[in-house]
Length: 434
Image 1 (cartoon, rainbow, N blue to C red):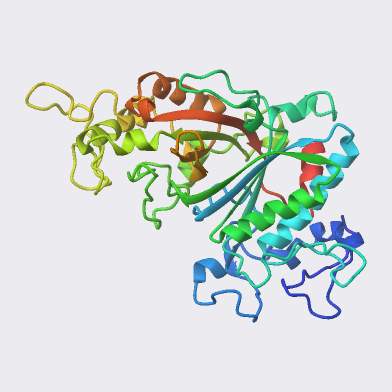
Image 2 (cartoon, rainbow, N blue to C red):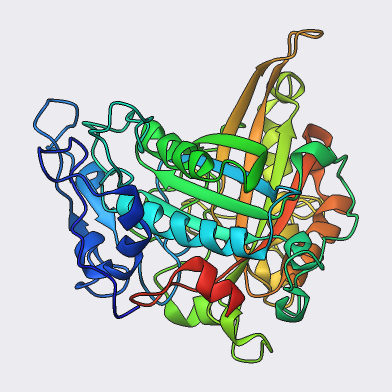
């Protein structure tokens, strides 16, 4: 793309004479250095330009920060977990072909790179006879460490687009697993987009605008809004709590540990599809909690279910949250201190031949069940891994034996391959189609 014009994206409030034409939107892909900090190191964070109209809080360094869009790996995986999520899946429209999909992925790349840098979707904002190219709800808001991560489902690699020969070797629908009652309408999809930010409106704005750009080429399948991260991916982050009130993700992979990420998360050089190397498999699961049932259970039972103390988060064999659980410890009656069916025992890598995954989920709510009055909500589980078999192996154990199953139900599911990061001048379409 050596003929790509040098385009500097505009701030969210366009200044006179700075609007970028619709025809030049695709050209913005090649101007990575002008957008999100391609001049910085991979994964770096920098302060973005923003508006003076009072819509943002300049005092928040985290909210003012941006995350590099271009790096060896996609942002939104090893990135320190943001507070909010908007996750959507799409199916390619029946009338769309290979060229349409490739063009859309190129357009999405330019838009995603601009939004991640804290800029609007480029376009002719001054044209009063056309809809604005950016929907505008992020004007005045700081970038909030927005990351936009794309993934491709197994169905995308059927015969429709000539991609059958480019399917990653382990990308196939997840098998039926214990503990699930899945809704097909809210599962799977040809493509997924994960938008994470510290501001919910910034995350929603990203998905809304990608959907808008996809009119005629892709059809929305399902979407989930997440609040309250349920994992920490960096030692600098405090462990959050899930909607059951327990600290969640205490023993998650440290995403700043390159060795652990290479061992458990990134697709390796043994993958036959070279374009997928350095990517990761993404598993999503919508897990509904039976909150009223849980809320009526006594504290001792709740702690037995998790194998941790509710207030401190310490394992039942320890005093502090990060104490290593002693799974061999027994009480005076000869019973395991951490029960045999406790969640942390069954999920522990020590008890699963070292198997680990990178969790990056969020809490969700669907309001109130109109028939029962029960709260509808739970965990929107997201995890990244080198092989889907890592999740399948864990879920087969948890689905059969976990005491938590009395209080939860897996109701939706998806598997996608998240490709590696983009090099300068590269776009998602060119990466996928080669």
